[in-house]
Length: 144
Image 1: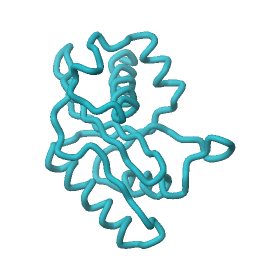
Image 2: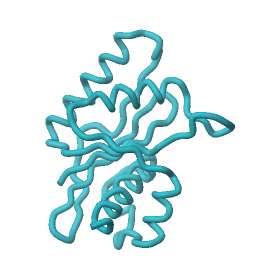
Image 3: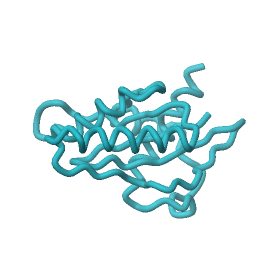
């Protein structure tokens, strides 16, 4: 199974792919690490993002997408642009799940990755997206 983890921050969607086979996971190389959307008030920019994101998911044969959930209200609420990006992702033709920050922390604490993040070949800004997809995959495994 191939899953794409997404962290939405401001006008940016940060990605990390995770492939799980048997008892091991791999982090496949991906040509795109993030998408930036400026001027989210323009319909064409959101459409362009949606098209490019969907194409990437098709090219890498992604089975599922998991998005790190953001607060809708309060001091730490997500931006309007991030919610537009989330909606565009949720309209993709594959299953999309949301996972809370608390669930991610709980899963990482229960079953930390047995690999050093620096050896995965990811950029530092992708760490949260990696933790999101890793925690979601753990939740799938241990719910069975």
